[in-house]
Image (tube, rainbow, N blue to C red; front, side, top):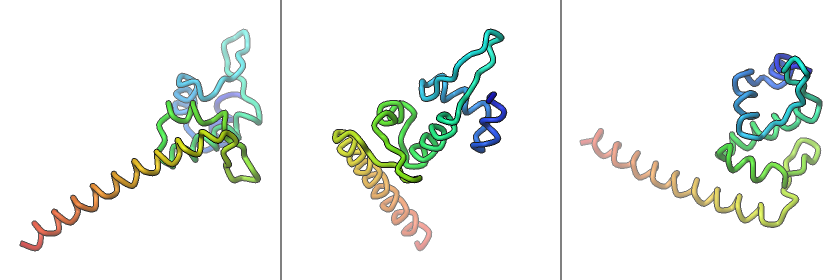
Length: 114
């Protein structure tokens, strides 16, 4: 399938799909004309990429963890033991950011209430 079809099937813009390719997250085949050709595996890969982006991972991080994920009936599971540690570190960074935001909100509430 061509990029437009992949965009329709995944709900992701063609621009985003090109970006994923540029980041090394997708590697479509190329026709002699230069058109990208995607397969069913790319549909699943885009779904995994979107889940990981929504989980707060950068595209660089996704490039590292994507090979270590197994799609278990619509649920992503790590297949490499070291991946779990990396994901725990990411969760800790998110927890710290949430704590900072809660402090900022409390400071703002104090100012509003003054």
